[in-house]
Each structure stands twice: as C-alpha cells, then as structure tokens.
Length: 547
Image 1 (cartoon, helix red, strand yellow):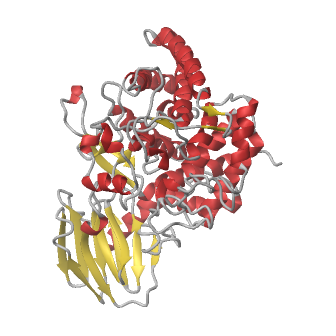
Image 2: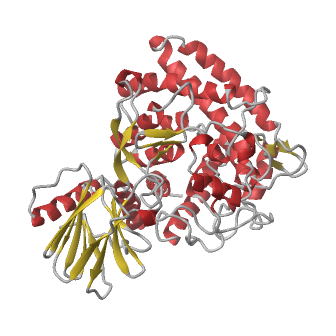
Image 3: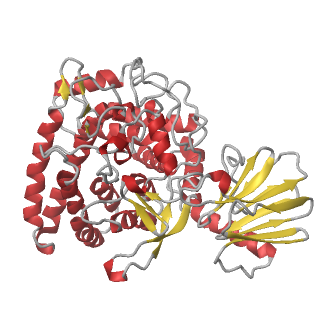
C-alpha cells in the first residue's frame, strides 16, 4: 500500500521524491514539471507543462501522483506521465538539462546524463512508491498528538534529499565527489547551506543518523584555511561576496543593506558546527564517536581560529560579521548601517564552540597530537569571549546590543539580543532583562513567539524574512539558551509554542507571521530546517516526563 501524502496539494506543497531534482507543482491552472538547479529561478526550471482533463482532485501516494486517470511518478532522475486525457508540452527554454520523450498515453522525462530505467510502467510506479515507503518507515517516535505533522516533516526531509557534486580535496586532485544532502528547499535552495546543514543533521539524527553525518561531512569537507563556506553547490562553493549572484546583491540593497561598502569579504555562516556535531554524535557508540571527533577536531578548531583571525577585522579580539549572509540573518535591520557589525549572537556561538572543542580535547587526549594544549587555549578564549559578550550589555535598554562601525547609535532591538543566552551562564540581572523581552507581547512574545525584530521597533515588518517573522531555528536556539541559563520551564514553553506554530502554519515553512502564525507569501514551503527542528522537538517532548 503506497504511503498517503494528504498534505501535498501542488500549490502550497509541491510534490517531489527523494533523490530527484524533479518537482511537480500547479501554477496558473496548469501542472508543471520542474527540474531544479542551484541559483536558477524556479520559473526558468520548467521542463514540461501538462494539460489534463481534471476536476482539480489530486492524490499523492508515495512516489506518484494521481490526477484523475493520469499518474505522474518520480523515481530518481526520471519522471513518467502515464494515462490518457492529457497532453504534455515540452518547455524547451526552461530546463535544457532534461530530455522529453513522448508517446501515446506515456511521456518520459529524464535528467541529462541519467540512465533511463528499464522497468515497465507498473513496476516503475511501484519502485517509486517503495523509495518513499522505506523512508517513511524510519520516522522517529513522537507523542500521538504530533504524529501527523511529524509525518509531514519527515516526508519533507526525505523529499528534499538529492545528490550534489562536491569539489574534491587535494587527495582527489579536485575531482568532484557525489554527496547525498538534504537541501533547504527544492523550491529555491538547491545546495547545501552550512548552518541549514547543522539544523537538518540534528533533526535527522533520530531516524537517519548516517544521513545526518553526511550533512556534516559535506559541510566540514569544504573547509579551506579554516573558512567553512556559506554554500556548497554542484561543482563549487559560495565563499566570498565576489561569488554572489546579482539577484542577491540587488535584494540586499533593496532592503537597505550597505554590505557592499566593505569590499570583497569572505562569506560563511555562524560557527555552530561543533555544537551541531556534538548533538549528532551523542547517540553513536563510543568508539565511533571518538573516531569522528578526531576527524572533525582539526577542521573545527581551524574554523574557530579563522573567526578570531579573519573575522576580527580591527584586531581587538572580538570577531564581527563583515556581511549579513555570514550571520544567516540576511536582511535584518541591524545590517542597514556600516560594516563590520559586532553582535551578541556571534559571540555566544563562539563561546559555545570553544567550550565544546575544549571538552572534545579532554575526551581525545593523546589520540590527537596537541589536543590538550588546544583545549586549554579554547577554554581561555571562551572566557575572554564571555567578557566581550558582557561588554555588549546596555543597562539603560536592558539588552545585549549589536554595534556597527558607524559609531554610537542604538541599533534596533532584534532576536540577536535574545540569542546571547545561547552562551549559557549569564548573570541573573542580564537574564531578567532578556526574559522581560521574551515575555513582553509588545516586543518578542505576542500570539506566536518569537518575532525576529521587536514589535515596537519601526523596522518591524512581520512578513519580510528576518525583519519580523518567526523562524524555527532562532526559537530553537533561544530555547537552548534558556535551558543553559537555568530556566528549563521557560525553555519547555517556548519549545511547545514552536511545535504548535508549525502545526498552525500547516507545515514546515520557511518563516511565519508572528501575528497570525501563517506563512507569508514569500516564505518557502517544505523547508528542511523547520521540518528537522520540529522533529527534534517532538522527539524530545515525547521523552519528557509528564508534568
């Protein structure tokens, strides 16, 4: 029996399958088959359009769709459109990497270079269904009330899985390697983004630990001179503002960012690699955990050093963001001024990364030459970074401030202030200020917490990416921080509210309007880190003792 996917409607939730770049959606009343590519606009990825005689009813079952008498099945890099009553039109200008072979009641689309399946049509559909069925069988256990959304989120993680060609290292003489990754969304994000990979790995660890490790291996394998790039995509990386697509530059400028004023700068993502790896390694047998720690320790210590070497542009020992993309908060209003920008979230991440690496050094001992010495250095640096973080506290505004290079002047109150708690161990007076903001309905609370810009700021835009909407990953990180700072019940309430929010939005979308809990028009559906973190929170909730 194929797996029913009642949430797939081809409009809000497009249809795809594990390991495939093909996506099926309905647009302007027609069904379109896309073949998605990195940094190619969705409308330029249309491989074919289908005219069907239909009353609009669609059923997604495993690896195929039923549209009246027509079936559309996806298996890897091949799609078959089967049945009478429809006409498939090739969109030659949309997806040049797709071959279309039409015959009566049967059209086959295949990615360039992909070997056509020799299966008969019925066997092809059955094989497509079986790929999805095997993935869904690995769904981790959650509490009964969360099961349906957990199924949708687990399907999203499987559906967003595909292979990318990753540049090889020196040993491979640059030859690309194939890596299986879970992309953020096939509708616009067809690559591995560094911090997306961290959150996705955490969500995969309970049901697909090997795939979780693959995300980290891919991200860490692209390290060069300590820098982990922003994006790993087919045949390359995005590691410098020089690599930015023109559309990205235009979008940043339109939102008010002056990131281009600082010249060509490295692009990366926040230093959460050691924290994420530590979480994923928790469930592994001790001997394998130590082997992976030994493998990743040099990469992550080099990355931490990079932040204090290259990321500290003025040499004062305090790393900064030189570009909004390196923060992950692309269009946050804290980046509307001059660069670089010192922020409490970055310093909190660096504190935690040094603490994790120091603990790893203790566990590894003499197994990694110099580990003990490096561990002591990490501890000392973590203490110094804590002092720098405390230096961002503004007693008048009762918040941790972000400060840019433009000189004195209050930057907006945003989620980066709350993320200071991720460091853990904050003094009580600092936590009172943060908790007051977290629980204030005129700031970050309200109907659906946590807004990414305080509601009382003039920059609050509840439907514009990082200028107001709720993001699941920042909620997750603030909840982690609350627990680290000795407020487990508040952390638990925020986690439950976050689970409820994904359900309110109808699925794991990119971000949500904090006033309504709904998905804003520009937010991507089928968003992987929202799915992954929902699953991790739901698994954790199921394991909690009853209150």
